[in-house]
Length: 186
Image (cartoon, rainbow, N blue to C red; front, side):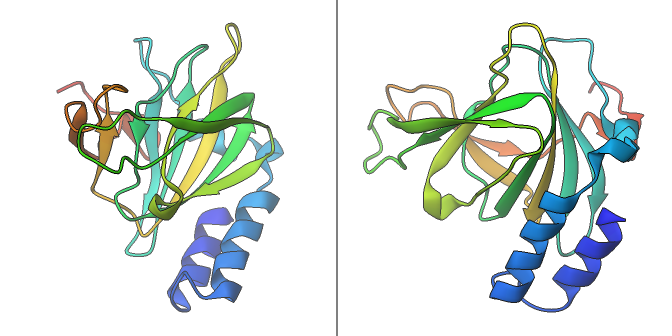
């Protein structure tokens, strides 16, 4: 079971030690999504936004399933100091990489974009810059599994590509569902 293996692996030492880091990568790559055990967590909201669904939060990691409606894009964001492994469980997702702004009023410049189709695994951390995730399909939904090590409580999102500081907002981590149960809108 992925959750148990992640917990055992990450409890064994610092996640940046190569054997531990590589094992997390391998676990995400080898996750068997054909068992459909993720579907309990793949909940959709009534709106036209992606949903963030908590699978497990431990002192070592936060594991969540995100469900992406067609043509939806996340804000450009950092990861609050966490490492992030993203596994495309179904469909395809486009990852758009941005330079970290050098001055407060800088424009956010996209470095490149890459499409990841299921069962791809990609990795990002704040050292690599900022990114946004998009569902490039105009008709198909996508589902992704995210493992954040360590888990984060807040990150920065950027809502104005022409002025990084003006559009920068601190965002608290929030979930649409926890353990397969949809939360009430607040």
